[in-house]
Image (cartoon, rainbow, N blue to C red; front, side):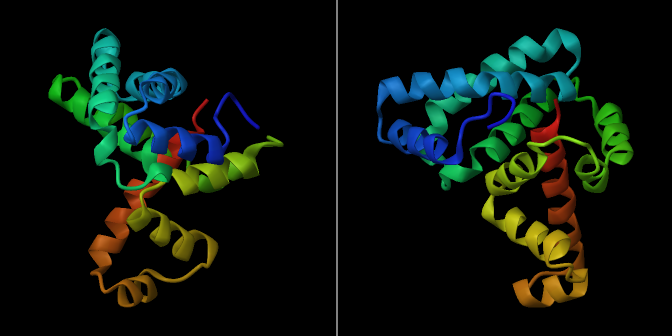
Length: 177
């Protein structure tokens, strides 16, 4: 176990119960995800907008959990909601996000001497929406080329590259301290 993240099974179970309308599960989900949501907001919003972005994201989670297609994609979904809220607030820190993304690749994260890193990386990949997870696995784990992935998935090269880029950003955000 690492850094307060929930085990995959309890997370999926909690999401499924919340989607079924279990009020206690919704409250538990809000409590368990608030730290990650706040971290995402600190990285994407100006300081004065962090609390507003967190509040709006928590509200979106409570009201929109039934629309989540894959319980394992919760983290990626929350990240996208936070980014949207920061953008909506008009203070999206794109320059900060780009400089962090350029400075730290997945290879740099993997080089950290952290005993829980393998587990965290697996959880980060598992939390991705399916259409991103497949691309990351094929490119970074199976070491397929962009062309091979595009042909197999019936996508353009540009679509594969865009999905890979977005997936890597979500993984970096998940792994951020």
